[in-house]
Image 1 (cartoon, rainbow, N blue to C red):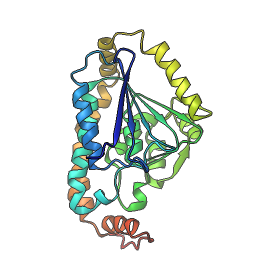
Image 2 (image 1 turned 180 degrees about the vertical axis):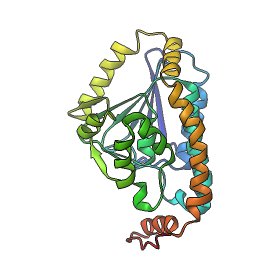
Image 3 (image 1 turned 120 degrees about the vertical axis):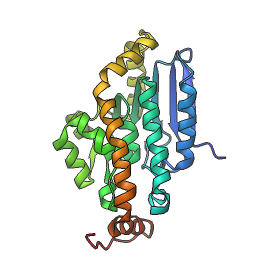
Length: 258
């Protein structure tokens, strides 16, 4: 089986670095999600972990979840596996940081949103383009309003537009912006040294749990509802299926408005 993530440990195994790496756009297909989930399960047995960092190999963080797996016959299984990762991250309570370069779209942005910090360089472009395919992003529909407020969240969710790192910083979506990828790497290392390594791994997890007590409650209550809405209602509409088909066939969708 092709390895779609690389995992590295440093600082006496207190920092885990996950690199999404499928050789293309780091698409979160079922194989990558399975490998991420297996690694998260291993992290649960590592009490010394103080931080998980996420990044993409190559120029981009991630183009998002596999569009092929959004098709009606696969959507339920895809969402189930994807959302399981979010609940595992919630239960781990290990601080997480996304390092974003290039495209960070759809499910890729949702994964970054689940992190406690997002650092980016000026090549970053972030967006939730699902509405252009006739569908919606369940995790982002919950997490974006919690992080940046309803008005700004609706801007991104209803237009599907991508934003640059500077605009994301202004939104409060991105915590720090660096000029280049090299600056991003160096700045992240400095931040880890100053703000993570001196602290107790146990205390950091309690701090995450406390800071996210409302966030986790909202996610746990509403993500299953949106998963049901997506699978049982949205995927029974003509336009959701047309949007996915049009993307795969590389043509403009013909909407029926139903």
